[in-house]
Picture 1: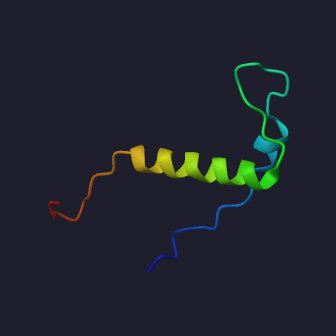
Picture 2: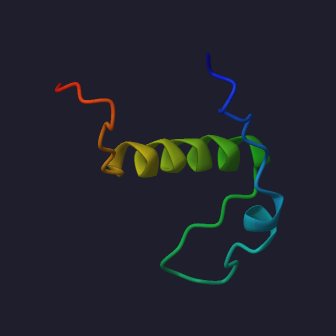
Picture 3: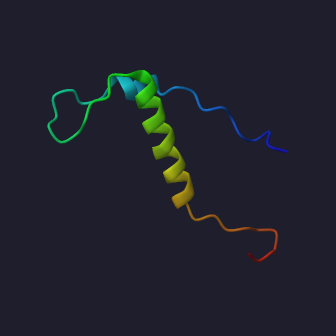
Length: 59
């Protein structure tokens, strides 16, 4: 049923390319905290997408 969903892997490249000395962006050095922030941002982006149903049902 949910075979189209893939397990999200840790975004190592995004973690390593964080701006370190930018005063406006907070650098997260703890990988667990970074993973949690990244997961929340990913969920927010997914929920903001406008998806229309093509099966004819109305919600």
